[in-house]
Length: 232
Length: 264
Image 1 (tube, rainbow over the protein chains, first blue to last red):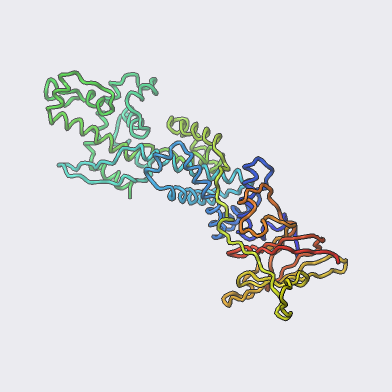
Image 2: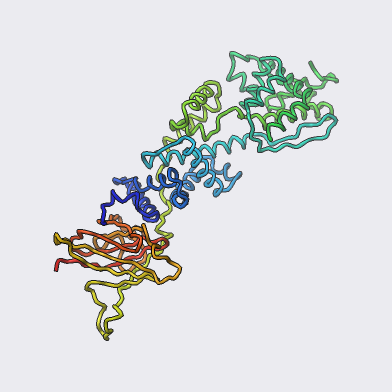
């Protein structure tokens, strides 16, 4: 039976949907009235109905959009030194999929769906930069001089690790400086500048830093186990 | 406490200032450091421990930047949003990232130019109007333009007929079959067929779309239907006019032009 277009959305085949989606996006770019239901239907089938072909179409249709966002990003040069364009795009769709699934999101407009996709890419790039800012891994020296290398791509329960490190540092001011130095990546001068109410003398920060290093050295076996365990 | 074994050996604090590139030793202490392996080792130990701790701990208590982005969009469950909001009160780095994220979210182009079009990946085939085998083929005689009609597009055969309903309205009926022995009877089930007012979205004789030719107008079909389980296509109440039909098959689009329907 012949039916009008607005009744046929859920029955449209994917290639037609993708085609209409492209047309509507072109209208949008030309600042003309557009209908985002075709694109949203692709998202709905891919995410809500978990249709593999729809997911493929979604990636095909919006992969170039993600690629353009990537190349427009202020940090693209650094990011592309650490991973390939294809991997960033693949990661973006993968993280997007899990986020939308876990958060039970239903998009009511193409804008909201693309905003979430863009947020995923932006977050992945920023996480890459965070990782880039970490210093290169150095092994913990064994008593005597032998060394045990550790992975630099560690991903672990930061909260548990912090609690364990706190237990090695009995003094509260040492704990606070350790947090600011190692978790926040602040230099002593930045600590004095940013936390003047807590630390107004850079010499004190240096002294506390020395104490921290000494305590960690004295507990190097425990520290090594702690960091190694957390990586596993 | 100090590990100074020599009067010119730098203090612990001075060595640590060097680790962070914040200090400048007096001339005599610089010369001593350049020659003293013990002081060089002290400096190296500070650097190593600092690097080690940073490499494992830096921002490991921070929410991921992906979640910060979702937070800025108002996503995430309530508990996670609350947790991030509390973290932002303490963490200047994340607070700074949130400022950057909000700036980025306010400025980027959601619909950048240059996106992919599936048109590029779909083959378009113009179906040929074929002479019915039962009819004699005569020199200089064009294939029939009347009804019913038989079209062929590669292995697909399409028959189109007109029928009149009780109320006098015209119905356009079709059936599609395939000569490909690998295709089952229901191979076309659920695929979409569109009927456009001529010239439709395509330019006659071309295998590219109006968009690809730079034609701004985007045409929508006036009727759309799906193929049933045995290949039937059914459009009802089709007004007189000139039409283009497009069948959106799995790996190709079949275009049938020159469909003239009148009441006569």
